[in-house]
Image (tube, rainbow, N blue to C red; front, side, top):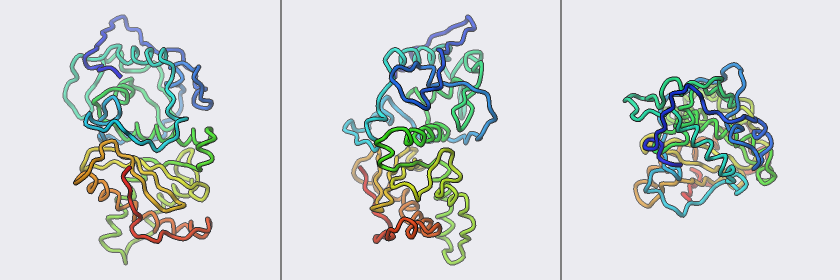
Length: 306
């Protein structure tokens, strides 16, 4: 993506650039669809509030500029296809229109002249309604914070696509949301402080996610072999993707910043809650018995940084 902070286009005619919209791309992937399919609009009740805390910065390849170029990807190539160049160019021009030359300071500063930021109709992305064009600006522009809502929407559509692409169906893949990782971390800390007195009833919301009840378009862990888990490492201000295999009980970490030394050690420390606590939770829902699998033999589950 180009540097939109420098390539500012001021428009004062009051017109909002939104190409024709076709939500069908959300159900049937096609290279023929226009950019409007990426920003569908439909009025409905808001389903989730925004969790307002920054969770990682991006560059053109998704992480700070020191990221390695020889990246390994957790997902199959079928999800890496980009829209036609014309579609991308229309999106870039739409994003540029009305951008402020300088954003005032603030936790989440405005990005646009006010009349350009408010969408004529909210865009329904399934989990939330997007009312500001700046939501897309933050997602598409570097270096800008990624927020929980960006990650949650992306993983929501991964769950939907996992039911459409044959390769993903065969792999039996599902994902969770950012609530899952933050809740697991919180419960793990409480469990560590007093294992004997830990209230397993406090895990109800997590167990509902595992059984496919709480996550929208989610699947029960009884029906899948692979989990894709977004993890925000607060001390590193960085996102990583965890690929959790329920068959081999292994954890693979896809980290665009990974390198030897202290960084990798801090990543492993940040994932201890998953490596130790998920098998305990799996036992609470009888996952081992239902899937006729042995529990992990190594505690905690080994973590491999890819």
